Image (cartoon, rainbow, N blue to C red; front, side, top):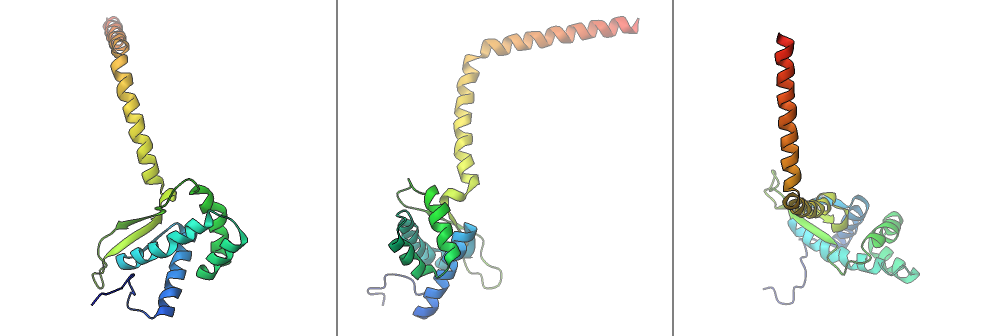
Length: 169
């Protein structure tokens, strides 16, 4: 039965699970995106998001608390210097899980877990949508300008045809 089971044990002992999640969190912080199984990605999200929240408050106590989880000075430095600055205004939801194809060997569900603010594809997509809306409004206002440009193109085409006829004679 599942009574009181708050998180996925991932089929590992407590010490193995804590070490694995610490290593995965360090990799996520250092590389901004990692590929793993879906179950591990969901467990990692529950593990790393409170650490990122702690990094918003840059005090000695919060650094030591995060270090007790990660056990990696470089990852703690990266988290408090770069990541916390970038996510300062975000109220939560620092990670994104994207499902991938199943793994060939054992057909396990794979997923990509990444830090939200470091994905340029999704950040640029919102900018492109805004540009499209402005282009539509410009197109409606400048119909007279496009007609003028069309007339000018037709005039140059007629002139070039006359020049070709004169050159042939």
